[in-house]
Each structure stands twice: as structure tokens, then as C-alpha cells.
Length: 300
Image (tube, rainbow, N blue to C red):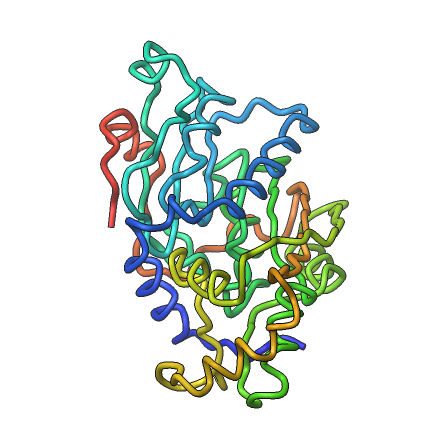
């Protein structure tokens, strides 16, 4: 069951993303692993996009890899709170790192993108949807800013994600301890309703191992993956509650949790989204970002 998220929750998401801008890269192993899988799927698409948008770019941890895959494309990152400048892979030779352009980034709400219709040929999004209060609206916006025959690839987390963590909490309180987790089939229906043709989705359960439940909680905090759902536990967790949670997971030497990874893609055809405008009060022409493409300026 999807925990209740409202439009106001997006302000909390942005706040937590900003707070963890400097710590994200050190604790983003899960994001990077899933991002690698997402980019592998790009090889299955016979497209050479001229303009690429990464929706939910965070620190920019995979923008450089997208630019490397599409060296002639304009690559733009958008996020509720884009963090520190993008890293270049350490494995790249120094000469390549010096020549690599830095994609532009800007801050925006994914439910209302500040781009004109048909601005991009490819949109990718890695693990952003769980923090979106209206994923169907995000899909509609992606369809709007895509060019005809443009592609959308994304990953998300399904309802089985963190089920071990929720189970540990079940005997302690009745507050909500996860949110935004939508079933693969519901996401597919949303894609179709948003005008994407022949969407393809699949899922798999990955196990992520931690020394204990405290290590999991610490990592979630460091990447800004905190609970912003209505009905969450108010305030800080007291010492008695912390001890109860540790006791509930003490039977295991380590604490492994499930990530139900959902991957999907779809194509935009001649759809009803053509000509529809964003409800945003402002719009950013994509070509205007070319000046910051090599300078690495972020737009807020």
C-alpha cells in the first residue's frame, strides 16, 4: 500500500537532499549500482539523442557517464536540489577527464518541468519516483518534454523494498516507516495513461547487506532517503525505541534488506501531450543552457 504523500512533502524532500549534498557520494553505492544497470539498458536503444535530460541527478554522479556515452549531445541534469558538481570516473585517463564537458544542472520540481514541449530526445531517471507525490504527473511531464519518438528510461523501488526494516518496526509502533513504493503494474498503467507506447517493465529483488540496522539507518540519512510520508514517526527516535529496534533485529549477525528494483522504459509517439504546457510559471529554453554546459554552472 502506498503511504500518503502530498505536494507539500516535496519541500521536505528538497530540504533533505540539500542537507546531504556533501555526503551523498560517499554513501551512494546503491544508487550507483542501480544507475549502472540503467545505463546498460541504453545500449539496447538504437538512438543518438541530441538532447538528454537526467531527472533526479542528485550530485551528478552519473551525468559524466551519460555525457561520455553521448559526446555530441547536450546533457542536462534536473533535481529538486542538485548538489555539488558532478564527479568524473576515477578510472578515466587524465587527458580525458580534462576534455570532458560538464553538463548543466538546474533545480526544479519533477511534477512541473521548466522546459518547452519536445525539448529532449532521451530522459533518464534513477530512483527518484519514490519521493514524488504524483508519479503519474511526473510521467505526463516527461512525455510533454520528450520529442516525438523520444525514449524514457527509469528505475524505481517497489513495495517489497525495506520489508525487513518495516517488519522490525511492526512490533514497536504503528507509524509509517516507508513511502512512495508503487507496484510495477501500477507504474505501467501510469505510463500508458500518460501516452507512452509499448512500455516495458520488469522487477527483481536485490539484497543489500549491512552490519546492523543502525548502519542501514545511517546510510539512508546520509543520502537523504528519509521518511517524508504523512503518518511518519514525529521527532527524533528516543533511546528506548532505538534499543527496541536493535533488539528486534539482534537474532541476525548482519542485517540484509530487500530492494525491489523496478526498471522500465517507454517511447513517445504522436500523443495527446503535444501542445500541452507545463503549469509552471516559468520556462527554461534548453538552448540557453549551452553557455553553462562547459562551465558547469548550476541553475537554481
